[in-house]
Length: 364
Image (cartoon, rainbow, N blue to C red; front, top):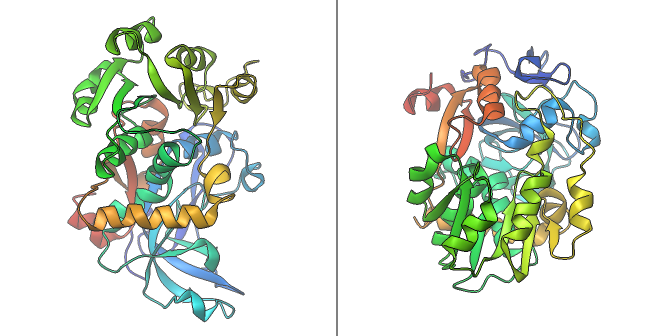
């Protein structure tokens, strides 16, 4: 097999959550032997893997998926790779061949050199598609696209939005999509003061996330009008109340995450009586959007059609996904430490798994 940036560069393997806890619980295991595809499965060698906040939640045991309710699984929500082998029952109508460039929002399993997936969960790319740029799309950019277009809000030109955690992977994606698809929205976003310049470069008016009264700042910046939609990624009681107080009388709050449920050092879940999902359901102007259950699972045909639209925007030069940091696969613990702290996180983070591509991109 081609060399990788894994701890065992000449042997296939995967990072496994050995027990729920901080980044140090990630443990490298060699595939012995490499699994073979059966039925309609496809064996894919991974070129680049996305790193996301969902990895944090999975690692500490708080992700609502039965496949990761116990340790022993591999995190990794999305990737770009190359078809290595096809199971005997992969339909010819799918058009897959060995060597094809593919991607998937697999939810689990991409912290690895190889992955087995059903053919129906795999999307074909063009050979000329940049694996690093396209790896950013399935989770981050499709979450952002869904929030803007498929979350039950009507954002006509000139509407205003408040983006929580604006400097992160999804916040950055939202801003870039607003420009790429000419949505003409007025954007405000919360972030650390150290990231103001970056957020402003995206066309977002920054608001210090530590401000004592965020709604008052929104009122000041909007001339008392407030915003049409507030997107909340933190999910704490204060954050959700601030979002609710920042919208117009007929505005909407879309919850997209519950990062406040994770301890600040990324070691586990916070013991709290506050339930963000219950809070959201108790308020008519609030709803929750999850890219998997609200979009991919429930409206897969729409998701795939939208996915192709975003792919085309990249191919046409209208969208250049912002990649904030690239890591070799052997630095999974370090990457998760950065993810947990949030320090320096701007845009999408990824592992470059293919050694040749890593060298070309200066990833050691």
